[in-house]
Length: 322
Image (cartoon, rainbow, N blue to C red; front, side, top):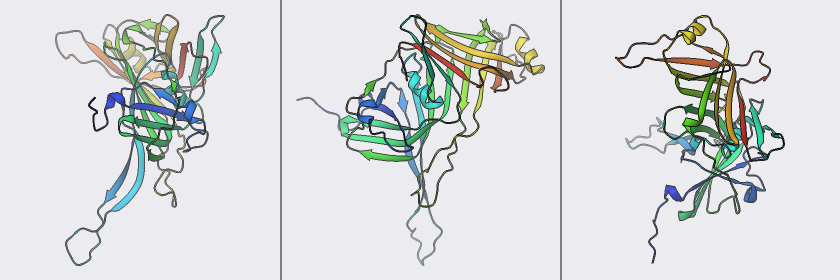
């Protein structure tokens, strides 16, 4: 007789997402349209503040606590890849513009910042203990990644949501299995001003979508009534060996340039283009006898570039559509 672990085990869990047509409502076709996503960690959860009141009633024992609003939020760490990652990009940016590449079986998907973002139902499945935790009305509040080094290339998807539901059945009966075509750090190149730079050791980027989480209304039972989009912000840091004053001079003169990370192998490619950026001025220090590195922070924006977006993500793969 096989032994069965009496509690949840991470290796047996799943993370499923379903794009909602109405905020906070699991779509009616979730049984077959939910997508099982590859992930490293999933920290999206509901929490509720508990406050000790100051009520006095003639003895020293505490009174019943006051419960506050519910906050659904957390981070999902996912592998960066050439196919499954497109669903997270859709969650962050909305539907891409997709087209076939020439007469090949490849497709190119272009994501840009739009006026609105889709909402999702995100399910954490614990089949071993027959428990399925659904977070309704979720939106991607931030996307962060860092390229460089020889470790696993991952992205952090920060999520803000509406309401949690705990059930004994999954929202999916036959989910779509997202294909994982892993991207790796050694496949990456970084371009500054359209030119490949060989001395850069890491490229970090944070896209904050400016979501408004203070949307609690009287009568809403402590849950967010909506999550509205605000002003996005894009920033990051580049680290490079100090081989010239090029970047410092650009920062000193407040020179506009562009930055692009291109990761590719064979028919697959992922490009993250920031068409308009400016560096903040930071001169390098001398930390020891080894090679000197410089760390420069940058801010991306949209002023007049033809792409009309502060971020343009292009994904090339075998997927026809998202």
